[in-house]
Image (cartoon, rainbow, N blue to C red; front, top):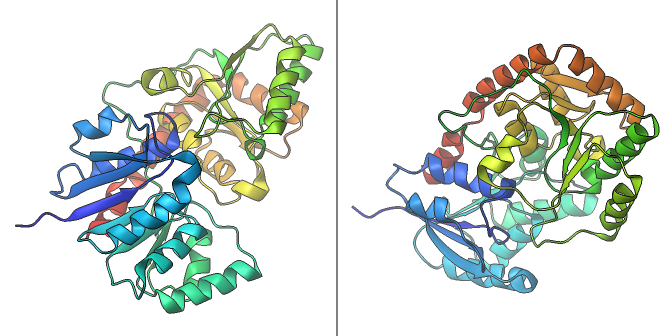
Amino acid sequence: MTRTVLHIVEPTLESEAGHCHSFVSSFCGAGEKSGCELRLYAGRNAKLPGLEKRDVRVFPHFHRRLRRPQAFLLLRKLLREPGRIFLPTATRIDLAFAHHAAGGRIPPAKVYLYFHWFRHNAGKRSFLVRMAGLQPDIVVLGPTESVVGIFRECGFGRAETVPYPITPVEPGVQAGDPDFRHLLFAGAARADKGFPDLVSLVAWLHARGKTVPVSLQASPDHYGRFDARIRAEMDRLVNIGYPHLKVRRETLQGGEYREQFRGAICLQPYAPADFADRISGVTLDALSLGCPVVTLKGTWMGRVVDRFGAGKAVDAAAPEVLFAGVEEVLRDYGRYCGNAARAGRALQEEMNASRLFEIVTA
C-alpha cells in the first residue's frame, strides 16, 4: 500500500525553540502513527532532532534572503509531485504563490493553508475573491471564525475553523507552583506584544522602590534580529538599573523554557488591535504549566483568562494598571495557579493537534 506523502513547508523553522517549532512538532506528533510519510522543508540551518526521531524527514532548504523565490520554486515542484502540501503559517503571499506556481487549477485535497491571523481591507478582499474563483479547491484553515470567515465570505468553499495545536505537556511535568518567584515576560520582544509597556513597568517599579523580581525572556525574531524600536527599548531597560531584573536575550528551549513559568505570573500586555482574535502560544504554554496570566481586555488571551479565572484581564497597559492586576493575583496566588492548571488541562483536550492532522490527511 502506498503511503500518503505530506509536504510541510515552514521556511523560518531552524531550531527547537519558539512557537513555530511547537506548532509543527504538535502537528507531526499527531501523525506519528498515521502511516503518512512526513517531509518537512525548513530553514537551511535546521537542526531538529526531536522531529527526526519521530520519523519526520527534514530537508534544510530556505535561505533567509531568498526564502520567497525559493518558496515559489518549491511549491511549483511539489505541485507536480504526488502528495499533499501543508503550510502551517500561511500568508497572503503563499496563497498567491500557490496559484501562480500551479499554472492552472489546483486539484482537491492538494494544498492546505493554515492562517494564524488575517487583517483584511478592501484590496485584500478583492484579492481573496479573485483567488477563490481561480483556486476554489485550496483548503483554508485557521484557529478562529474571525480568521477563516473572511475567506468563506470571499468564496472559498473549504474554509474551516480548526484549533491551534497546543504543545502537549510531557509526562511527569508538574503544573503549577504555590510559591511565587517572579513576573515573567516570555517570547519574542515585539512592540505588538507590549514589550515597551513591560520596560515602562520596570521603570515604574524601580521609581517606587518595589522589590518584585522580574524576568524578561526578550528573544529576537526567527533570524536573531531586533527592530530599531526594540533595540532602543533594550537600551532603556538596561539604563533603568532595576536590581531585581533578569533579562534573557536568547531563545530558550525545552526544559529551560518551561522552567521559567514555574512560580511566575506571565505578563502579556499584547495590543488588542493585533490580538483581538489572535491566539498566543505563550498563553497556552503558561496555562498548561499552571502559570497565571495578566493580560489586556479585548484580546483572545483576556477571554481565556476570564473563562477560567486563570489570572486577570486589565483595562490598559499602563504600569499602575498592570501592577494592580499583578497584586490581585498575588493576594491569592495558589488559587490562581490552580485555575491556570485547570485551564491548561481543558485546553490540552480542546486544542489537540489530532483534528488538524485529520483534516489535512483525510
